[in-house]
Image 1 (cartoon, rainbow, N blue to C red):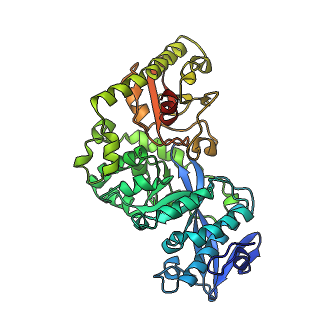
Image 2: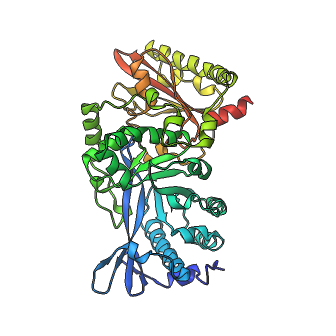
Image 3: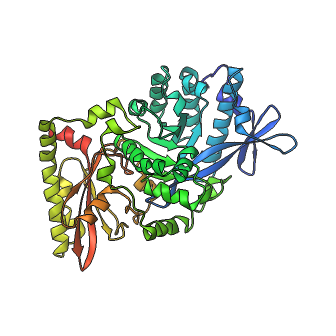
Length: 454
């Protein structure tokens, strides 16, 4: 039996749909509703990893009606709920019921509909079952304004139990407190158009942006830079070390995600321009100043980053086997061993995920060498989702630090990786192989490592 939401069942919602040429549309107050999909690209992979679904509504005269007009103040919650569930159903059907599509689908829920999880979660459970939505392929966007709502905890739990991911939409770097992000633990944080526009116009905002992204990575979330419209904005997104980008600079929205053919050469050319201009960005070590001096801060996160001398010493001691192992990989490949054989010792250490090698330009050389028994990822493995072995990691901290100090092993802070690990640590070292400079890297899930050790 379909689960009710104020009397609305999936069957009732589907009765409001029409289908033409394999595309679903809906009707609401004489408006025809449809979907357009804006691709979201992984910057390192240079591939689309998902799509933002947006509502397109047209009146009887063929005139477009902005979504903001439809989703105004909630004067009639029943009507708002109906429109939101209808829109979500259209998006899901157009994405999952047509041609095979890859990647994630991001959908917006009205704040009040999201928080009304007793009803909405039941409807979504029927929706994902009916359309056979794979786990971790549907992402629910919530606005940053909802993060401090006292009703937030239960909805988050319910939607995650359905296999949905959570994304915080329209997040700004001027937030005075990141505790809400720390406690909400979204898979993705989307920085809105105002962030990239502000960084373009203001030098101080541009300098603060990489630090904001770095903090979010440390807190276990990935970052989308939204609303990128120019090459300058796209270059700022790379320099900020954002994981993903979306916007008209990379192309117009698509009606059919199944027919999407990729970004072409846009991202390759963008990376070439970025490296050629070699922006004088703030070094990672100097960017990570005390949180007491930053506009961005989180009392909870500050506690996590504070450690006693004994704790620091213990952490350093735990890193020693990995440092020694990454040094031996460099020595062995330099002496002529194949990479997979050279990595064998590192990949037997507790929590090890994989090893890989980068060229002097930061591009991956061949496929990664995985551990035979890798720890389970906590999130989406975007490396596998992007299906590419030639990612560009030149903006990542572990590459820059290794290249700047050849033959010296480097260790990152714990951060959220594109491999799906929320507390990943990367060990890296630069060396020379067959007369060419390379950077050898190894990733470790520190959560799994700590679990085995303790």
